[in-house]
Amino acid sequence: MAIHNKAGRLVGRRVVIAGGGSGIGLATAGLFASEGASLVILDRDAHAAQAAAASCGGKGLAVDITDEQAVADAFATAEDVLGGIDGLVNTAGVFDPATVADTDLALWARMMAVNLTGTYLLCRHALPALRRAGGATIVTLGSATGLLPTGPGSAAYAASKGGVIALSRSLAAEAAPGVRVNCVCPGMVDTPMTKTVLRDPSGKTKRAIIGNYALRRAADADEIAAAILFLTSSESSFITGTALAVDGGRTFH
Ligand SMILES: NC(=O)c1ccc[n+]([C@@H]2O[C@H](COP(=O)([O-])OP(=O)(O)OC[C@H]3O[C@@H](n4cnc5c(N)ncnc54)[C@H](O)[C@@H]3O)[C@@H](O)[C@H]2O)c1
Image 1 (cartoon, protein in one colour):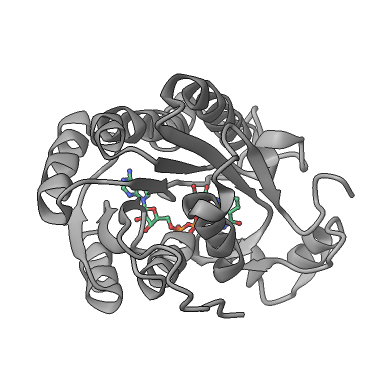
Image 2 (cartoon, rainbow, N blue to C red; image 1 turned 90 degrees about the vertical axis):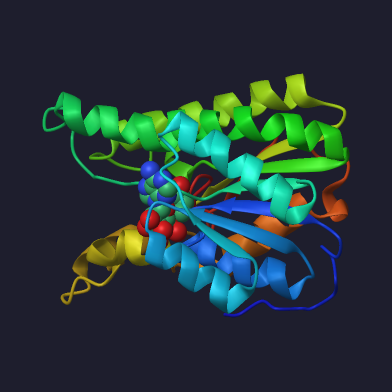
């Protein structure tokens, strides 16, 4: 379900996409490029960052978002390369399903470090450039599981994403009026992150999951990228501090 309108909604916008090497981030990079944005793509996976930059245009940088110095250096490079930064999108994240009983401290710490601390570090180090640009935006990635419990076995992930939603709302209050901050909360999306769940050959797990969705299917990454585009473009100019469920009806169903 490719959504490439080429309406020029991001012409002149200079955007850093973290986690742009795969899945939702890669789809966002492609859509943003088609809408006229200039991009710097960060990813822990150097090859993926370079490949995304080669296919979407822009510069790819190998950055682990849990490394504060690497994040600070990346924004200095991005501001230099792009001539300023008007937008940050963070799609970098990890998902290790486990019950609380099976979640050891290492798994818990990894989930918090990437999903929550990584989001905080990106926002903190992007803010000076975003404030200088004016009319800038941050879009973070929460999850439907951070809005409402969506089943057992993902407590650490849900806690990290609940934290991302709360962080985004707090930052929206601090960063206004110059910078708008919104959080996109997807339901199940077909990406490399969910391949073991969605592509289980028996199809049993997938059927059980999508049975809880009003729309009875998982999303394509392009459908999440479309929501990220809306919240980055001027079409959402009076929206800040929102946590937007893009979840096929999972959290109301
Ligand atoms: N796929 C889903 O069903 C789903 C649902 C809700 C929320 N989300 C969230 O959306 C975001 C994107 O997920 P996706 O499905 O595209 O996943 P993905 O695994 O396809 O892509 C995630 C990207 O983040 C990068 N990354 C991971 N750790 C990093 C780090 N420390 N530093 C830099 N880059 C790092 C990976 O290399 C990868 O390129 C994540 O935050 C995820 O939690 C996904």
